[in-house]
Figure 1: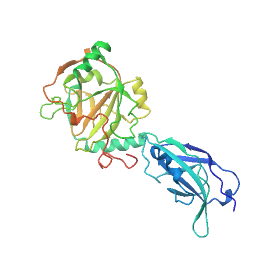
Figure 2: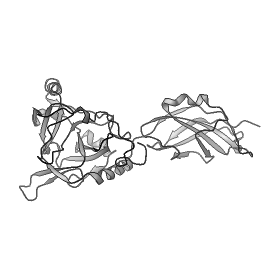
Figure 3: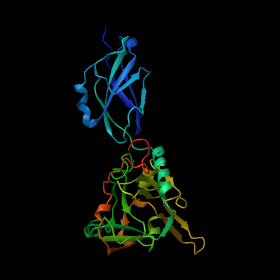
Figure 4: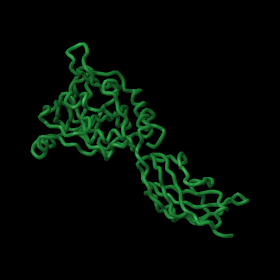
Length: 333
């Protein structure tokens, strides 16, 4: 019996965080005998697994021979932002139920995509459920060590410069390793209405009036929702001055929030007072706010805090708990 054609020139397209399309070329010989495709998908660290496969070993996905390109979705729990390898066989189901198969194709590598705005909106909706009531606040603050602020004064023209966001939070977050910004906090203690005196990031704190960073000329975006195997949940928000490079980046990738009406961080005019801006933050989540532009130290003050440096609360490169039902969505991790 003539051998089945080996798939050639495999092409991967339409890649999302949990699906892709695959197609390939085949010689015409014995093409009509093909009833199924065997598709072998591995995370890239296992890319040598194919060479140990024999022609008669069942593969990970047996798919009926549908017209190409074929969409692969839901057959595996694909993770976003993950490198995979894929190889293909053609197969012909025999009368005894066994399969005649071709040789394996060449191995192709590809990487799944970040969460889309559809997935981020699902995370946003989950975060809204637990955000809690809104508390008033007046300052954004950033803790670092003394050397950080000395360096900003002496080398960076008295400015805190944006840096690339680390890989903390959801694995599929489109801002990790890509968006540049300066991290701020704004959570307050409910009994004092002021920032807490402890911080995991350093004993020196820069404080700036909220309206310097957050005002009607600023756009607000939802970035992520996660936890780190603890009861605390974190929401990442992005503040981007309208028309800035950071604003352009976020517009294409993140859900925009109404600055006067959302469950996390608001800025609105005080209708009962003098018309000045008033600010509120969600009580039941810890907000991590990324400001996408440089911040001049002259805009605020730097002082030493009286509390402790609680390193255990640091979220630097923190891994998201993939088992938490509160902050995970059904796709990826």
